[in-house]
Image (cartoon, rainbow, N blue to C red; front, side, top):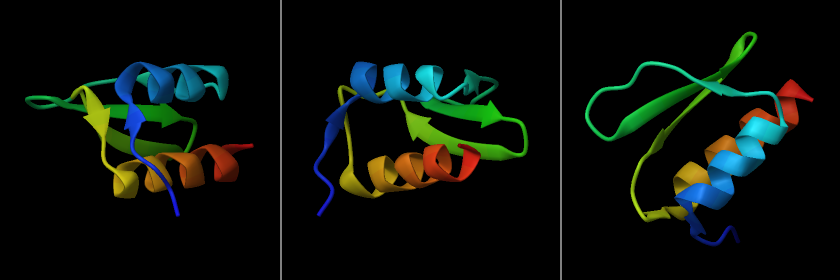
Length: 62
């Protein structure tokens, strides 16, 4: 089971995988790497569901 992750840790993983933050609305950020994208929130702790979604996008982009 995926555990919650801090925003800074997840953002670091996304940057290392080549994702770049783009526009967002409110506290949401869209991270894009070519044709792959994921949306995360700028909160202190990211929920397990969003972490799972981001890790899946990283895996697909690799």
